[in-house]
Image (tube, rainbow, N blue to C red; front, side, top):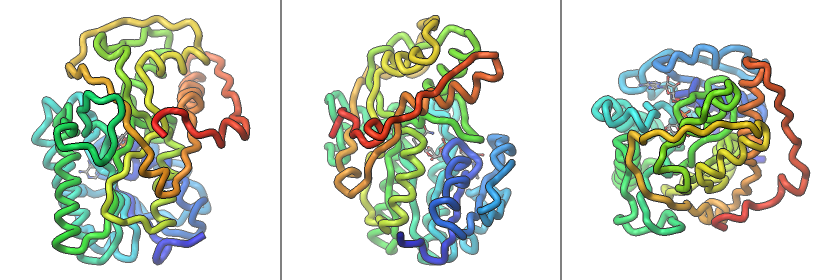
Length: 337
Ligand SMILES: NC(=O)c1ccc[n+]([C@@H]2O[C@H](COP(=O)([O-])OP(=O)(O)OC[C@H]3O[C@@H](n4cnc5c(N)ncnc54)[C@H](O)[C@@H]3O)[C@@H](O)[C@H]2O)c1
């Protein structure tokens, strides 16, 4: 297995939902590597730093990605840029701040990468799509890139910025459009519907489903697949400037609820008005990333089950997580291949 140059990783936003799993996983995949973690603690996820594995060589830097001196941190490292304001729904009320932190932060990280010659993994989102088509891919016409929130709009602008920096200044990067993450981590957040439903289900509360969204399909990404995808990119040195959808499966909200019902059959649903009136239903193809050699092995049902199990003790709920059979682990998801 090839190792990244210097065995060093610089992870921004390292204490968040994805980062807190990734920082624990990196030393198992790349033994002996140093993991430099930057976070401004704006999300208060101090607990993500608790009980890090002894095998890891960690260093935490409390700093704002928009103002910190990033060059020394990026030197000799693979840079994984996760720091962002990520609540898409609230980004309507918060658009300027989202642009400042997300676009400004991405620009500063990319500047540091260019200055020291470090490769950069940039996380975009499948929410950049606003397609009416059943299945959309990375090569879709611009008319199908219709971001549904200021958060998604900024993601698209970040992608464009990085392409320009690649062309003009030699940035080595990759853009990953992640689906909505499912699966627990030390620093997980609960403002995505799938996590909020898991919380409500365990607590015996009605699941608050947006009235318009029940039958809309959306792309999801098992957290296991998310960290494996980052490892795959590093091992393959896949900093080809391309955009890849990284999606475990596409599900309707109904489908997500069906997954939860497998563990907690007795669920109440409460339909509520949606703050974002997005009427679109679409599936996102993951074919391009599979063609690059990646195998998706994550299971949304299992990721949701693991999330429920993590919360369950708090409400005396007994959740049994079925182990994946070898067959299930190897099977490709039927959708969108
Ligand atoms: N989780 C998902 O469903 C999902 C889906 C698609 C894309 N993404 C993208 O993946 C990346 C990571 O997402 P996540 O779910 O882990 O997010 P998260 O909100 O859980 O974590 C983000 C982290 O960034 C930190 N942060 C925020 N502003 C900062 C700043 N100015 N300086 C330094 N740190 C700062 C926060 O404190 C937090 O710990 C983001 O770019 C997000 O847009 C996430």
